[in-house]
Length: 159
Image (tube, rainbow, N blue to C red; front, side):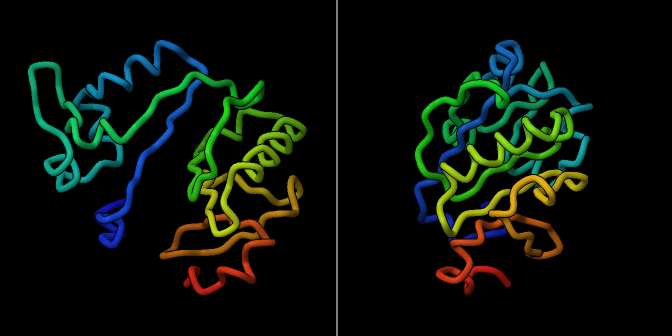
């Protein structure tokens, strides 16, 4: 994100990463990845900038890793308490749920998303026919979703 939005350098940024699997969370907290994993969509430039090579493969830099808080959570179940957020990445997750569960998840996201915030779903995912409180926008060729009520107030943010 910092490579695409350098103005964020002065912001206090942190990420909350959730997963239903304790094993996956523990693995992610270590920040250790195999060569195969880093080869899947990560450019050589980003790899060399944010990771270092060790005898186990590639490890993410501590200054990057320290910005991430890992929490166990089932999206289809009871949610943890979250602060208001500016950006939600829910990529390639909704495809695993039925329509009713998707509707509940999108409703919960509405409850934590700032009016000017963005929801990023996977390429094959949408809010269409699930939650009419969102509208799709394109930013630099990427589809994002925004809350309809926040569009009038913050319409200048979308280009």
